[in-house]
Amino acid sequence: MGLSLETAERWVERWELQQQRYAVDREERFTVIADVVEHVTAGRSAPPLVVDLGCGPGSLAARLVRRLPDAEIVAVDRDPVLLELGRTHHPDAARYVDAEIGARGWTWALELDRPLDAAVSTTALHYLDRDTLLGVYRQLAVLMRPGGVLVNGDHLPQGEQGPAGIAAHVGRCRAERQRVFVHEDWGAWWAAVGEDPELADLLAEHRRRDALLGTGRPAELPLRAHLELLREAGFGTAGPVWQYGDSCVVVAVR
Image (cartoon, rainbow, N blue to C red; front, top):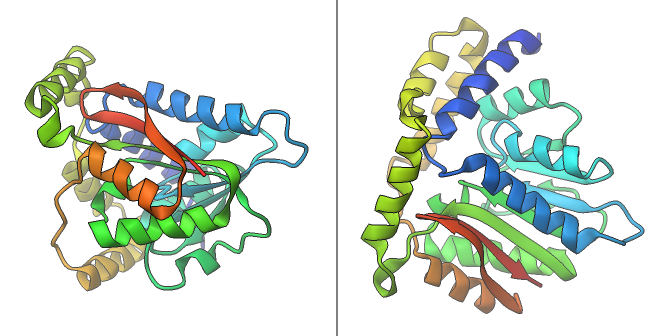
């Protein structure tokens, strides 16, 4: 028996609220990503083909398909809970794929039938270590048509060459003015999910996969490192097109 729509709607709504704590001007960031994809696919005869990396419950895919209703979106994530929420709540937004980004064979799981017009991601790639991220960028460059784009909205600190502490402070001030910290945080959301019997089997699989990966997470790479890796991977140009504090949208053109 699949997940009920009512349950999916409830948990996706709470997900949307808690995620505001972790992405300054989250809705504007989504809008900027859609602006870029719309711009680079304008005037093409074929429907845009887009892969959504680390799609979660389909938040970005749902917004993209509202802007580009003809787009074919392939949404990939490794989390069974979030994937099922997306499949149930946003079933028409994307074709959802269960795969771990950067793992052996993950691009084959996407079953792409033509070159990508765009790869998009939001608050998902920062958990990859440097070597894995470079490999993913290289794979995406191979999958993408000339002129296609990778659009990444994520936490990208300025590093040693920029006023990192001030940038982070500006972002926190913006978040406080928007009162996003009144919402539950990541840990509280997952704790509440654990009390819903309808999600018990999915959560058990989520925990099993997490145990296989371990608890260690690499340090977040600064913006400069991402730009260097993108160019090394074969993208011709790369740079930020929007930023508020550490919340940044980077575009790399194939």
